[in-house]
Image 1 (cartoon, helix red, strand yellow):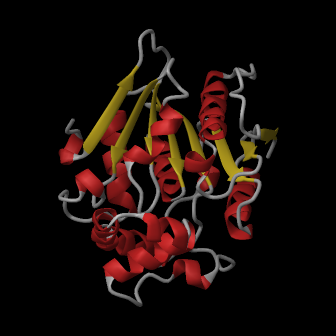
Image 2: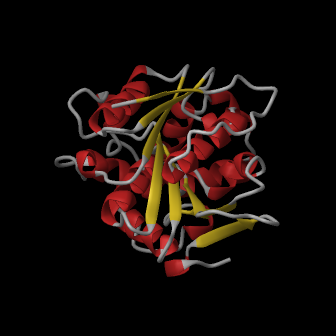
Length: 271
């Protein structure tokens, strides 16, 4: 269905769903559909996923968004709340920005390995998005993040779709690394959980660690055996990450039922 500003929105409202709405925010060169296996593991919740502007079914939404545009789009979906917002990668930056801007309707936030590409220690290669035609850059980005094999196995239609997302990808990565920090996470006043994968590269893991250290009372949640694409490779673990955000927003430490067949996540509180 169409959401605010013409965004493509999927509303997953299972029978008997209760609690705040959970809005999942995808990362760069991704789309709402990538959360499908996570959503299936959250049948008792009201979950909303959507294609961010510039991507997939929301590609026609203009202008292609900078971070502030994506935050505004998310807040339009949140409305009067209450909502828990959980973002993967760049979607984590969007979720954090929304939680900082609207701490009333947003009652909890989760960010899984959000890029901190404005920092001095973030690898330069991961920050550079202005040295290639957008379609070629999108292909390179996909190969680096997901692998050559999945790109080669994808059909030409799928590869063309990813290349068409290149302008949105270049815009958000270029603007994220320009200037200073886009927000001060130390001002965060809602319950927060920062996620990382046990097999993720060092800078993704460090991003979660530094955010956890900067926000007193936050939780650091690790998905054992996962890397950056945990929502795809370890959907049960990512679903448990979502539930950890909900528990923290409700002030409860109760465990939820684990899903067998995947390495289970571990978490650490403090900050």
